[in-house]
Length: 372
Image (cartoon, rainbow, N blue to C red):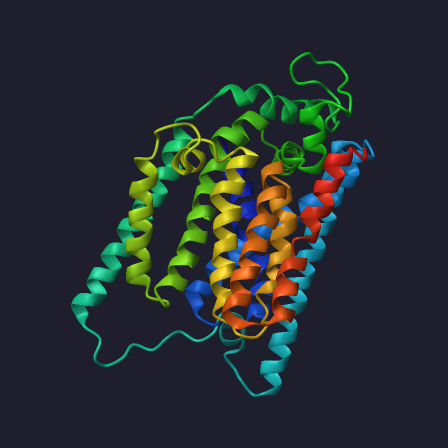
């Protein structure tokens, strides 16, 4: 593993999504600095998955090459980056016209909260200690999986499809077991048409120039575990009203649960710490917690607000990793819509929430009818 490879992965899964997320934190008007940066990263990754889904489904159905798919994804990523750039310029111009010299920090990530005169020094020490402990635990979990690979039988399909796509410059036309042409009416194949997760991974492998097996078992799990805990940190911020000390304790508690959760291969701990490179694990460890974070935020707003718009993004992103996402996202969204209506009696808001599941519905019909 070279420094160039590590740098490429950091750019693809740290810098690029955080830049994408500038548009979303500005749109959602997130002002608290640390939360804004974290939300930008998480929502930026979500946007990457959504753009991958939008590009890959028609390209796979049209039997285009992986090279074409990579080119289209790069174009979409460039458009998203330009949108964030335009957002920064627009906010910068507004603040400059208002005479604010500290434009960028106030417009994009907000003001830093001032320290009250009565704040206890011991409380600050405990906060730093808990935050440091949470960071060490999370980084340790990510490093262990990246350093000591966990390989199971799913490699025979997932990694094989990725290798075939990278080597042959094709997308889902070779049987990963028999190395023969794969017909579109085969069950697993038809699911992959609506959720082309392996092709998204193959495209990322092309972008960073890494072999699929190395990408899936070493590099990608490290970043994905950090991203998943980023979502949990956002949930902690909502549950504990922005208290980072309590959020750190929440992350420590979750870390302990995940570390001791290997009672089977299908627990959340196993999905996060052993199988996060698989699409179904991304749905369980990233998409579903992200939905609950958005539900918490939307529930706090009696009026429609801006957070329901992000549900549309999650609907596309949740469809990419697995067919499970195509089903579970609409189910959770429908249930939450009922809960929100019972709390606020706002039909407009409830209908907007329910309509956000429309992309998943379209992909579900595409899968069930075998439109390819």
